[in-house]
Image (cartoon, rainbow, N blue to C red; front, side, top):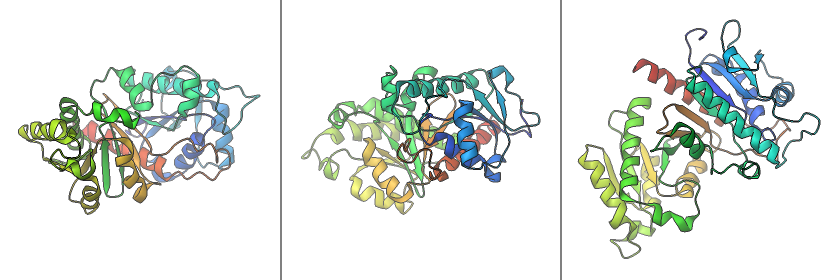
Length: 338
């Protein structure tokens, strides 16, 4: 199945109306990216071909229509065509249930390749959550959906770029619901998960983990909220008792400065924007989203569908290239550790 003994990466094109196909075509036009793995692009041939032509992509691929055809002989890039999109009325930058449904079917198909052992990792292009919701999708994003499909009980979202790697204790939930979601047991499991994945997939033998407080000044000993005293600090102590190199909770405004100066390998953040604002400030165009805790490797670029520039051939592909590189590196390390 494998050409040149390289890992197989399934790539979903995301929302067909977004920039997914464009950044895939640009990424795989780079010889360095093609050398990393064999690829199965999962999407619609019509949509991908538009981007392939528009970007003047510099590679060849072979179209297939079933997972059973995934075989790398003369080509190291395949396109699994699910034929979900109406060619006659296709448009870029449009919120449509049809496109949302198609983007979810791409994810399902990529996951089936993992289950059938026809792929070693998944790299996902962005979906549009509103289009997905219009199609009946009941999950908040890729992380939650892939956790459901694989029955993974303990997953977390990590984003890496430049000198920062951040993990989110909570992901796509309203801020008003964050405090009640910060439970000691859950936080402790995430800390253990970070340590495990950094060791197994990134070769960090003693991961230095810094934990953000939830409240200003990390709660000031309970005078500005009690989430730190009641849940965050006990979770840290529990992880420390198991030999994990973790400390905190620290005020977020000082912790990110220390992390930027390499005092920590990973920062555990309590909510979405607490981690993503500093990360995207310094590495917006190169950051990678990695799902920890799945029974397979999944990465993605750290940006959305960019409907406003879709179909204009101006989307930057650096983050997607980084997602491919990260997935390939993780797959190779996993193979060596078997």
